[in-house]
Image (cartoon, rainbow, N blue to C red; front, side):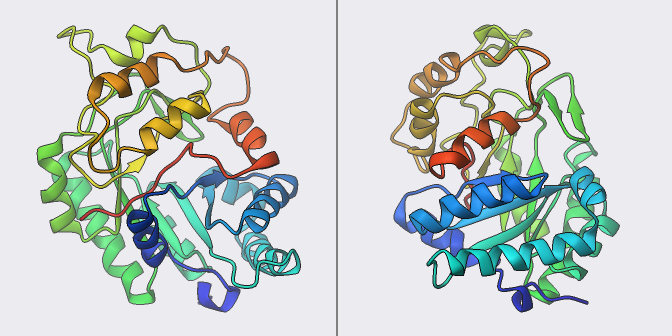
Length: 289
């Protein structure tokens, strides 16, 4: 058993509280090699900005869990060498798909895990998420759940159809599971695809807009911001509890840059560009009330 605290990492609990109180976003970057990790830490240390290092199931299998443990520890020490005296760095499992995977990550030094049971029936999602929470909280590891599914592909996560989060289920889900944060489906898409604005913002069955569904009603993790321009992403981040109307958010989504099929998948190209200069606003993580 390796505690994340021994590695100098932090969980998301206090990090999210400060972000909510301060009205800013915490970026979460998936990394797949040393160069990406270097860029993320350099930008974080330069701006003294808290950051979430995300690792997918596939990336973990590729890198090896033991090497990841030491890469995370090295990232903390590297940040200190760059002048960041007290780094606020989270190592997070992105889209974990089983209790066993989440448990293994907790045991190997991850400070936060995501259990994605969104493809399961609601009650099964609740049961699986609660099981992960009960184990992780014993070791002060924070847990992210998910309600709703975005179309597109992100590593092993794939769906042809979006199922937007139902706001009326959010309170019930959080109460029953005890999750520390919740990913909700309100965004554009996962992955590198070209869509018309209507495909991202209009429900084909009803003809009604869907992009802003639930955006002002719940504490949430923002996903599916693939190819949103910086200006549009800032607009979405600036609406944690209201203040941005649905039309503004819809224009934000419709104005996103197109991303040709076949380019780097799941925002990896976006992340590389962001890492070069600053911590952007592509992902916003907030804990539920």
